[in-house]
Picture 1 (spheres, rainbow, N blue to C red):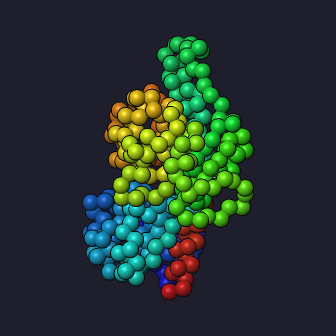
Picture 2 (tube, rainbow, N blue to C red; picture 1 turned 180 degrees about the horizontal axis):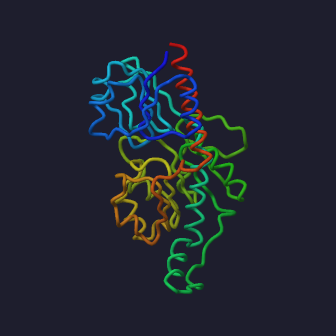
Picture 3 (tube, rainbow, N blue to C red; picture 1 turned 180 degrees about the vertical axis):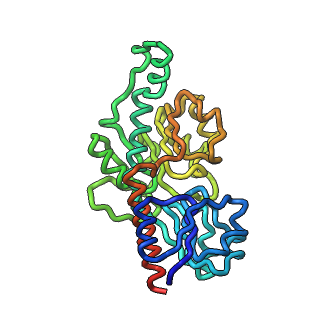
Length: 301
């Protein structure tokens, strides 16, 4: 079947070429969220990233819709169960951005440990505050990885190469192709870890709240390149202000684009605007993997 596909949040040139070569008709012009319900009915498929939301009302208004594709891991911007109940195929790219997200976590970790952001900003203002920025090494420290899927395991391998001790945590048993300590006791992981990195899906409510933070090691650092909703930002700010936490690396926020100025501008926080998968290599892999899955699906209809 040759499909009409709305590519609403962009796709790599390689991915677009795969779809075009297979004979599919692509619409690359973005349909704004408020107009999506009226427009989606013209298409057989929609491809999105994190910006576009495909909810029940969009699905109900689109009887010809056969596939929803998500370039990335999380599916919280799609009403998956409802779509599947309507016979709509859901595809995503869980492996394509693992290394890119893991590297961003490490970038935030180094930024916090070596005061990269404040040192950079003060130097640009003509200051030379050499004695103020006494950092710490990550080698020999313990990293707790909460959520030990593809991204968590990629991070673990990289952290081990840096000389860190890694403890993986997940609610389910996971298979690893390398040796690593694994625990199902979250409280124990929080108590032992100098850094906690989150790699969990949206849960409907924050995983990291005041109680979670209270169980963390005093002076630990929190890293969130997963989903904004898994961290209670007010509780995080309280912990940073009190000194309970020494720092936080944040790529994702409760509201995006982020509006929490207190968190964005906090001196103990390293922030980025949801760029975990924003590398040339990851975008190519995401586009290729997503396009291939779409082509294979329609080829079998």
